[in-house]
Image 1 (cartoon, rainbow, N blue to C red):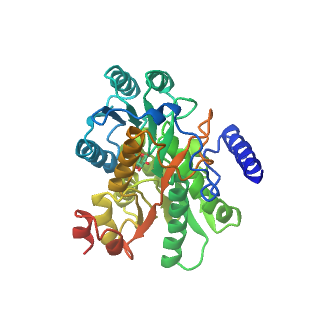
Image 2 (tube, rainbow, N blue to C red):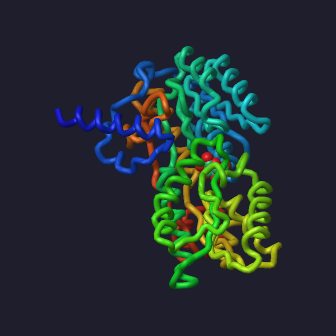
Image 3 (cartoon, rainbow, N blue to C red):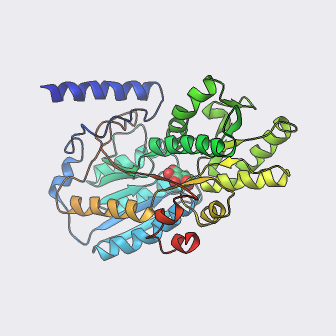
Length: 371
Ligand code: BGC
């Protein structure tokens, strides 16, 4: 049947993406997705309503993770579960130990925001062997069969929106190019970083090729522009060097920043160098960045409301508890190197000064800044 052919073609395409290391490059996945594909056979049995649910979060590299901790603790408790929510501030081996300990304590679902998406295979296999369901949260886990679902905002779309915002912001300041820009990406161990970058470059590369954009430093490859550990000080240092080596006379028009923390570090560097603030993108709707946007400094951020992502994840846990398959909106696009992981994707929204008030009207903290 046609369905089978479509699935085979989609799987083949997904494998090619995996082989070429492109991460998620297929934006067409959503529509024809088969919501019942993939998933976990053991889920069909359900589990007791007061079971332990483990949530392994990475380091506190941005506000969204800190918000997630509180929301998971409260949301899981309100739903009647026992919650074990952990940060792994000391790094990968701490996260491995935490997951192992959740398995030992009998967690029925393990939700993982991986520090390093390719280093958890052994622990997640142990989770599967114990009968638990594994949900990758926000960041995909790579190169393992031991993951049942993925729940996240559409990360490729995040990158596309950042690329578009960078162009629009520069055009608003100066209608005609060429524009001088620099590129930043996130931490290379986070599976999302390459996806954000690929999404942004799908918009920016054609403009680099036709001469509208000039990356003055010449640093255009993912590996040249990464920011180890998503650390602000690493982005600031790199920006300092880029400015002193390339912009003594040239004007910097825009910087692609993958998130707000790094965006603010880039702005700090530019200000310290005594240069005008260029168009800088971001992501996460962090309080300080929303203030900066309202003050006309940072140009854009992305609204990926953590409340929705956590409640969507908890709904998936509730479905699994009841012996149902969890919700899947895209069963084709996320090949982790071993398998296509059924994904529940949420829509990110670009935010600039223009739509900030509307975007945050339901957010008790951010609506106070944007009113
Ligand atoms: C998340 C971003 C966040 C970054 C750093 C990514 O995996 O998707 O929202 O800014 O990690 O914490």
